[in-house]
Image 1 (cartoon, helix red, strand yellow):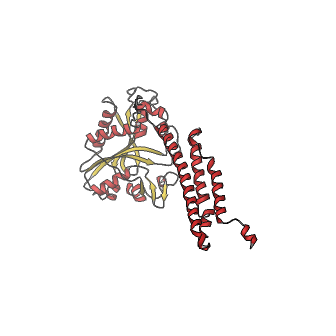
Image 2 (cartoon, helix red, strand yellow):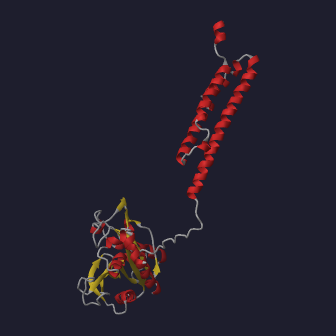
Image 3 (cartoon, helix red, strand yellow):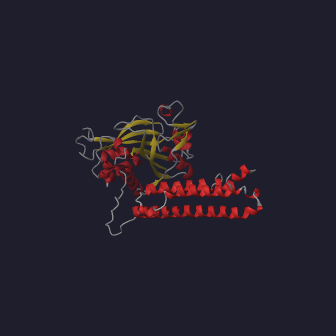
Amino acid sequence: MPERDNQPGPEATVDGIRNAFEQDIARFTNLESRTTTAQETEKELQELKDLRIKYLGKKAELTRLGKTIGRMDPKSRREFAMGLQTTEKDISRRIADQQALREVIISRSRIEREAIDVTMPGRRPRAGHMHPITLMRQRIEDIFVSLGYAVEDDREIETDFYNFDALNIPEGHPARDPQDTFYTTEGFALRSQTSTVQIHAMQRRGAPVRMIAPGRVFRRDTPDPTHNPMFFQVEGLCVDRGITMAHLKGTLQEFVHRLFGPETKTRFRPSYFPFTEPSAEVDYSCFNCGGTGCRICKWCGWIELGGSGMVHPNVLRAAGVDAEQFTGFAFGLGIDRTCAKIYELDDIRLLFENDVRFLEQFR
């Protein structure tokens, strides 16, 4: 019994915790007299949070002592509980005071760092501008809209029916080979021409129809100065009663006149496309030399515009149009290639590299 009387009681343990806290909190006092950076202050703020857990957390010594109150002698229980409560409140208050000081310092530092001097002259933002391909696309669209054509657009992932079957491209055709077409899943592929939009338009609107379909297309081409696996083209379609090859020639002649000038000439060379019959490649006289020969036209006087021809009856039937009542013509040209010719670009890849120094030339 005498030995147990000599052991320190709970009060002595609370005093020990208080003394230990005084030593821990001492290094956080007198903040105003010290020079600290915002980073150091944030670190001290985190250390104060850790200090609160150490003395007031669920596993802290004060919490453990609080759980022993119910087993204490009733005569000393009240006094001990009040002392324990006072100690907890004092520790909590002093830690909160130090945290508040640091939060004020961090807030002031953030305000100073993010402050805007409204008396300083403003910076004029750099004005954006259209990409050269977009500028060319808009020029082409404006020309055909003025000729009475509608502008159509549709999905870029198509089924084999719209990408091949409806365009009279049979099974086994080289265009359907995976080495030439980007297949996504079985029966679906990235469209290899915007002719797919023409099928959708005829199914939806029927005939007669006059439309162009500008947009992105995808083919498995190796990038070089004249090829890209993703490029832009515009397809045109006119279907009505009595449409002939003469209407096709007149339309494309008017188009190149408005795009390159009234002196520009066109010529048609026989060719073959599965979706047109008869088919023709279209050239126009060089807009730079007028046909005498220069670097842009490779000294031949002519520049290739694209493919064209009379819509194959099988294509009309696939789109639900009566091929006995209606005929039509179609054509297609590369927007980026036309853009490269007009702006005298030696490498078509420049249009897709997003080099701001290059693009700033086309404001």
